[in-house]
Image 1: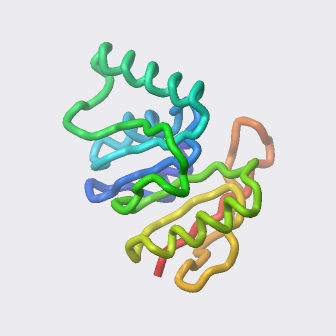
Image 2 (image 1 turned 180 degrees about the vertical axis):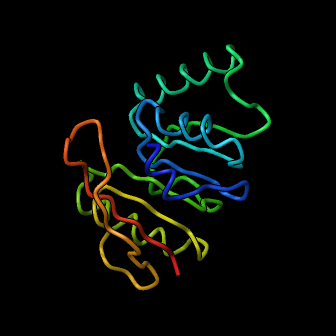
Length: 155
């Protein structure tokens, strides 16, 4: 996570989305280590994982670890249908995402603002205006060699 954020260099203007955020570890981490980031949102379809993310966030708020002047939220919903129009950075683990979902996401990204940066662990289908800017292995907890990360920018 640290290496990835070092490559992305989020700023106070950035709005970070984790599509398929699971129990919320990465969105919470982004909020905690990027003190300038404007907003962090995790979207998860599985009710049990979404519930765990909400509980973790509530606990951290009670403990005073969360900067409540900056937004960090978790949404229980469909990552293709939820409003992500303010996103400037999108992360998708995507290792288990089926091809039709990747197709739908790639189409959805074309409706968003130019300059959007997307990082995914599974290549997106080719689309006009969706430019792969980098492909590089980054360390992961599940692989000594690291996992391939695909970096995109919406033109």
